[in-house]
Amino acid sequence: MKVLLYAKNEKIVSRSGVGRAMFMQKNALKSEQVELTCDPREDFDIVHLNTVFPSDYHMAKKAKREGKKVVYHAHSTKEDFRNSFVGSNLTAPLFKWWIMKCYQMADLILTPTEYSKSLLNGYGIKNPIEVISNGVDTCEFQKNVLDRESFRRKYGFRNEDKIVMSVGLYFERKGILDFVELAGRMPEYQFIWFGYTPELQIPKKVRDAIHTDLPNLTFAGYVPKEELKKAYSSCDLFLFPSYEETEGIVVLEALSSQIPVILRDIPVYKNWLEDGRDVYKCKNNDEFWVRVHQILQCQIPLLTDGGRMRAKERDVLCQAKKLKYYYSALCKKNA
Image 1 (cartoon, rainbow, N blue to C red):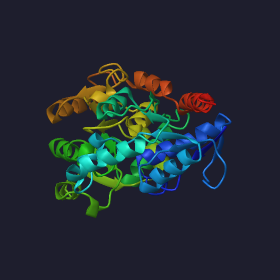
Image 2 (spheres, rainbow, N blue to C red; image 1 turned 180 degrees about the vertical axis):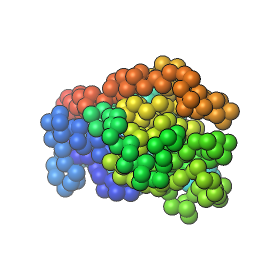
Image 3 (cartoon, helix red, strand yellow; image 1 turned 90 degrees about the vertical axis):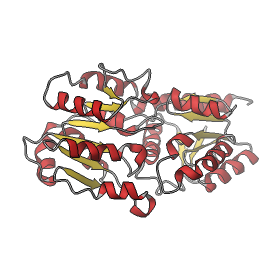
Image 4 (cartoon, one colour; image 1 turned 30 degrees about the vertical axis):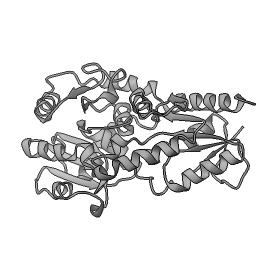
């Protein structure tokens, strides 16, 4: 059994969660001794696609013509396309039509959560769908208190500062407007956002937000993985006010790194992240304001042990074993 991890568009998505998922897939599958290639000119039995560019669709069509099996990883939905790029709300129905066209080429669709599976079923997609977490490398994302001093020195923070961090593209969907509002309401704490999107691609209100002049607000831009690991270990709270996710790889990274986590109470976290056990969930900025204060003033438990356990349940090596099983079952089907 040989698998083509189709990676033509890997560089385009390298700074997104999809890009991180592709990188982890490759490394984890190698640990499971799955024979892999990224070269479509080689012979293969299964093609695994992670993006929805036209080249991916044509690769799927070519594979089907040649009698190969097609696995499509459904990282994207209409719901998480909305409130992202300029014009995304207007084009969301077209995007839904396109991803359905792509996903319906698959012999097997993989998607990260039961929630995202329910969305795909709601679209009327009849192809087999299995749930498999994107996973997180829990050995790599661990708390390291030695990073604290150098990280804070680099970004100009004092040792006594309380720092609230978030990670994501400059999308309204990610809750960036709420993050900026909360920074304005809580001048006693430092707020830092990691991630970047070219300003031409985002609406004016988001452009205005990232240029908000607040002494306690920093937009650090895109940083490599090693720098992000230091941030998780050095900040005091991970605040992720996103309105829509198919899973949230940065949430897994934060949980694994044992930083206290506050999330927006949205359906994707139902049945795997419990409020008051693993994370704290909030519905609006007033609730976020209360929880941020309570955590940073040590008035409530941090829940980091429960969060780490949830991350371990989704360790990338466990997901690789599942993926290998799905590949093998697909090859045996109709053999």
